[in-house]
Length: 269
Image (tube, rainbow, N blue to C red; front, side, top):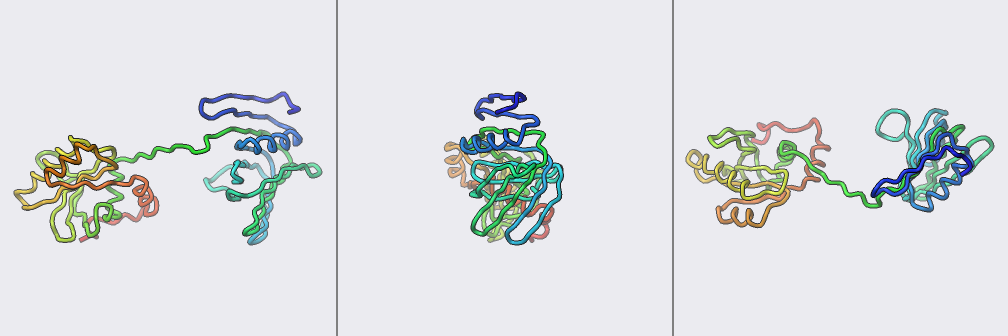
């Protein structure tokens, strides 16, 4: 690179990252071509206009933008606000970088269907490259209340025909997370855990079921959790209780798609 204003840092697990302040267009062309070949993510901040050709024709006048180019061909153009990019190209797109007159041009194209997004920079204040983990591991965790909301939105998470009746029902030994009726109108007590269920969870469910048996007769007890220990599962079977595996990712999907549309308990009856 021609300029001296380069900062390089190494972060454990993420490889080399470099930042360039006020780089020349020639520096950017060299940086982009080398970094893309090495599978690095590229970021540019500066003044640019944007042109789109494909399903239609559109243009965006010059303004401050952030451009992100990923090694899989993903190309994103962001403004100063909003989550969504103002324009983008999907993985598999081809990026070309070159200098044309007094502008730095980034052109991203794909063939089927044909689409092209071109950004023309008149100035660049910051350029950065970084190596990211190819397959990031993302651990999803939500609370028991969120799992319960997902079940209320889609009772089939417990079983087909399940109808929720009450939440946080008070009994002598505490509060039942959720109880309702199965397709045969039999009462069902549901104990929800957000992590692996253990013997303590089984005992808790057993106590809740017993606390309602005198009043309602035969009651089913279901322990709903992402996973369960072997000892806890065998104890459930011994007690005549049941286990339902809860898919956390599915719960999040349900809550996201039905945000603001959760049904009330009375609507199930």
